[in-house]
Length: 138
Image 1: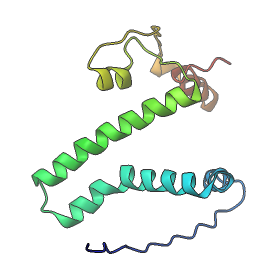
Image 2: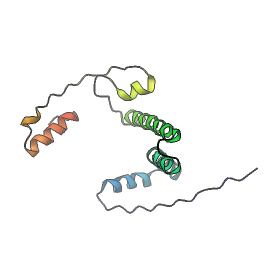
Image 3: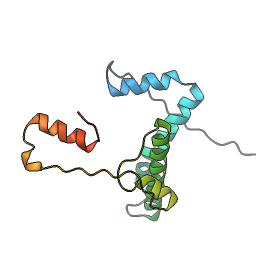
Image 4: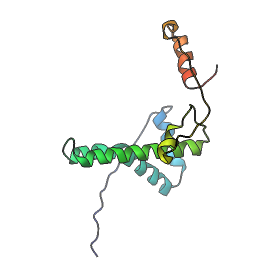
């Protein structure tokens, strides 16, 4: 039986207190090592594999395109699982993630936003517009 070679990659993060990265690092350190390692590996694969393939294969190759679409599907599945884990409801007339996963057009609640861009000149108005797009009522 041939023994497989392992790669060694070490990364040390020392984010400043109060940053988003510090929040993520604190959360990762609070979970068991095996689960932590699995989450970091999953994030690396989802976000970095297409770039690794681009460095390995010729531009426009079938391997790069296949990797991209496979990664795209993984991201959509990951976002759907995140949505379910966080207990979030879909916003919009069609849930694009659920539609992609099931191949069916699943209807959810319908939300319509009307924004008059010409009237949005002040910073407070921009903040209100952003909040309305996100479904946050002030």
